[in-house]
Length: 593
Ligand code: CAA
Image (cartoon, rainbow, N blue to C red; front, side, top):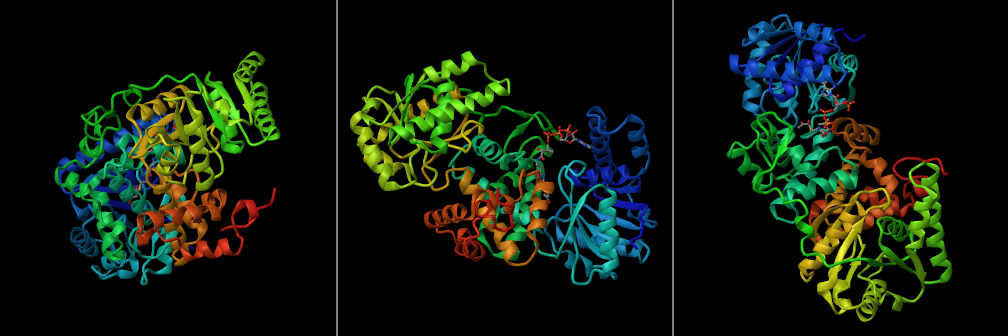
């Protein structure tokens, strides 16, 4: 039977410590909250008051419960006030020497059966445990930021943690309304080990000026459904904390993908620590504010579309899922749209699919018959590429074969009028190959839509070394009219989204392969700890393991980064024909539909 803890302590009242205090007090525990100085204590108290006030405003807590919650917290600047605590959670800065000192002091102050927990994100819990005379009572209890909102708690047991201590902490996590996953003591545990490789990668993309901070963040929010972009998340976590986590991970893994990108250290040294100091990658309205305010790096609205060529008539080449979705998107946005497919049947197939989709929208009350008629009136179909002679923009979504695309672009170069913009939706081939084949590389741009094109808001606008500025601007202007959010990047494998997403998915497979955690725990950690809409294994099974492997191979081939080499487990599953949902089995078994 697990102990029911009632008297607890929290040491360190920064963002995390204050949040943990809130969570504990909210669940009815008496909390002694300790900081080093009256000033730091006041700031921690302010955090708690503000956060609970927000919870009341949002209807998550009633005013009387808030008062009771605040009354359960005793504020102190002395660790001696923890002499009665049954459990203490330490949440001071991520520095081993500071933590070991606090643990050694707590060991002397607290009764022998008090559990000493650390909220460290990456430091060795085992090393902390041996700084005390009670290593078996030391455990990791890792909360996520913001602690009152994120439901995950990682429970870290070391080789010496007593099973009863694990049981007590797991029971407490449940009482706090959290989802707990229990794992061993490895830098980054589950969620940070997967998250920080990705965050560091995003930072290095920004540092290399591959894309702007706004575009990197928008790409991951809109392309993957993440609650925040990686650079905004770095600011929420705190640049100093992120640096310490990456540095610890690097020291343990020696994986250069974990070596903090230089700009992280520069920001840290300059005191630009993110939201908590009012400036990090972004600038905020003030200290601890979530409101981003414009600064010198903020792009001017509509700036990317300036100088665009006029577009009224558009040609869409292809008859697959992406082409069909895009035909609907263009025609609905008011463009005269010509569909070019390989046979009259395929042309009819696209037009019929668009009509069916519009009917569905009528049934759902989102469109009326007149609207449908207007969209269909803008659509024509043909099998003859010569009919593209008068379009202002061609977007191709034919099969992902370089040979096929090169042949198509060579013909587009011949039949399209001078000044027409030629776009490819390729997600994996170099856009410059299509550009060269066209004989007019300045007119060629990548327009990478996401599936389903009618729903996903993101479009990556890919400029090659040869793309003319007004061609990229045209792509932005058209995306604006389509109601899409365009981000700019250059012609590298994976563009923004796939280049950031697939190495993270690969890391998850490697973690599974190393038997550090189960697929269920890894999926839960990312969903509940970081608010991801799907865990990595759910996503891999949905995307298809063969497709994922192909993308990972391309990224590896382009960047020759050892950390991007596809995990052997993924290769084996693909070889075995376990491709995910589409074959009924991938990382999990699926009911065939
Ligand atoms: N108590 C209870 N609920 C609260 C609350 C409180 N004190 N404060 C806010 N909420 C609720 C709000 O009411 C809201 O719920 P509803 O939508 O139902 O109203 C929800 O929490 C979030 O509301 P916010 O207005 O605060 O903000 P948001 O909708 O803009 O979301 C966010 C903000 C939760 C931070 C979201 O962007 C998100 O999930 N981001 C990802 C965060 C993440 O990845 N965290 C992990 C970082 S890694 C880490 O922490 C580990 C480490 O070691 C560094």
